[in-house]
Image (cartoon, rainbow, N blue to C red; front, side, top):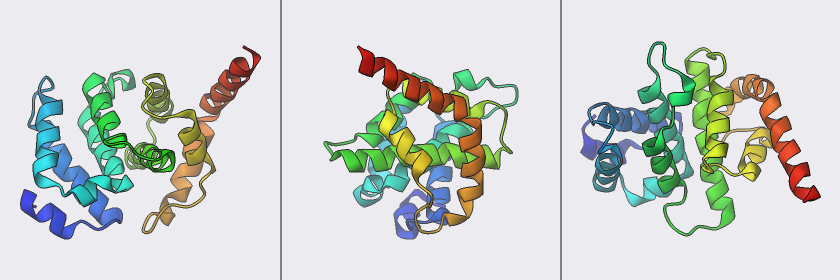
Length: 190
């Protein structure tokens, strides 16, 4: 799909997110890692409408594209979301001063992107857990957004059939959520 067609065909549904993530992936795979942030940020500014960028599902598409770029045979999940990827996610999650619920909506969409890619890659062992830890350690996603993702029991339009993949992810993430709860109790004591 030509870059100038992305805005025309984007809809806030599964197909729109998929098309957008593939377009971003294509741009990322053709760019060296050093200038990736500047090249992709410029490409997004030039080719993607502000309306789409403001849509929380834009972050889902970006997350999917990053996971695809990072997915290589024998690739460690510790190497996923390097500083450039973290900077991209942070930029588009907090691209402008937003009310907390809008930031959380974007953060939750990032987590859904990981969930979807885990299912698409047939649930590689440790992927979701390591990526969630990475996003938490790098302060990309707030504790509240992790909890919100865990509690939400339905996707937005066009995504309801992915609930089964979420159930599997939540089970795998039991230790992660226990550590979040432990961090809470440690903070309350101090």
